[in-house]
Image (tube, rainbow, N blue to C red; front, top):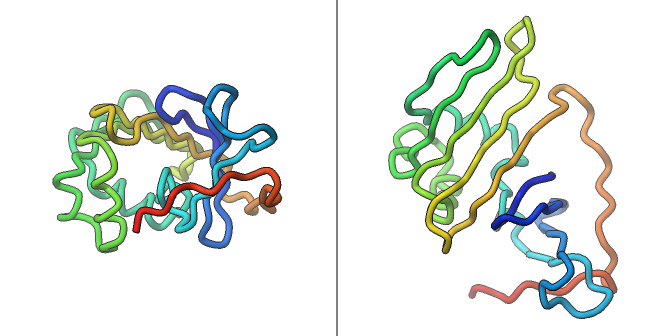
Length: 158
């Protein structure tokens, strides 16, 4: 996934329950360590990599409007999302997101999505940034995860 995390362009790779988040120069990472390894795989934008969870999230829309043909905009109020989302893990993960998530959905002539953009903004202590999902219907790419010498382990939260 390509996105913006707390104002910095980031690449997030998710594979086998692990997320790898690209590190930028000046982040304090040891020399040669270009990736932060986060076990658990859903700590940053993990919910956005699963189309089933994205669909549940979009069902919790608020303030939906058709801005142009094939282009819908709306907001998701995370405090109300539990009324529309069946997955308890997704509901719990929303606690790490701002109170409001805005989104845009673009569709083709058949109504199939071609692009979904989520923008997270709000409390700076929570995740902020944007996620853009593209290439609907395309085969999932093979993810080449970073090697052990390229990663620094994220601290455990337990």
